[in-house]
Image 1: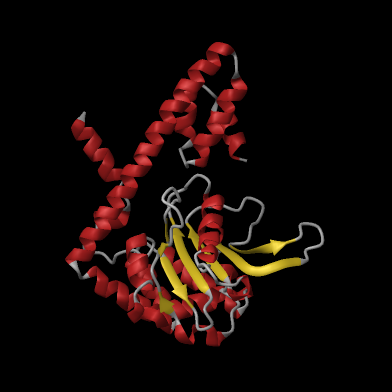
Image 2: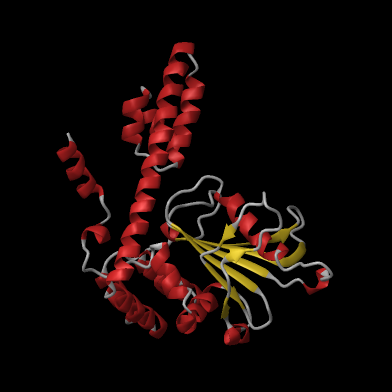
Length: 312
């Protein structure tokens, strides 16, 4: 039984984790921070931000990597730790996040982190007029925005009916790489969108030949490739990477196990009480965690057709 489990773990383990000698993937948050959050790589960070945001180019002339730990105002307040926290030339604050695993309440988490960047600027005696704009850019390996097919969405505070702008002091960008267009459609994109697509393809790439090909299309991506190759040569960095991958793997397994246990229990109770609606709702929750429809159908008693209809 243990031997079978080990073989199964090996088969389900991500390709880049099995290949210890391959280039480390930028999609791992540790490698992401070491690349974009290193002051020595500001030119790479600048190129990425310039491709995504609509700020004047001179805003990136003086990028400062600052403390990712957001100030806590009270002992009971939740600490915010950002992936890459940046201050621009005029004092605007940027947070660049990468999220691979599906996380519940992601929209609320993004909003909370963005608000913390704004609130952390205020100390006793400071004026609201001195608040600087805050921008969050979150890169996602899964679809978060359900009512948009665009891979890049930009959110500000607007009136829902008139679309009049209330304030531009808060800005949130989502970049969902599952929604990237096919390479055959690249010719139809404008120059700025084309740069966004290149960066997202670099971040999501798992194989070195993918990164090498992208590096031929953009000098800053070539520099990012050089940084990745250097990081990949360090045994210490590899150990950090593998430790982080294991932590993510264990957390997803724990989340799946806990959710499945609750799901199975709820299904049993639902069947006993004839509450199929409850079973369906729990199936929806499990789907949101990325659990295979086959697994849900097998353990729930619901038909695969029902599960697939829920996915739509």
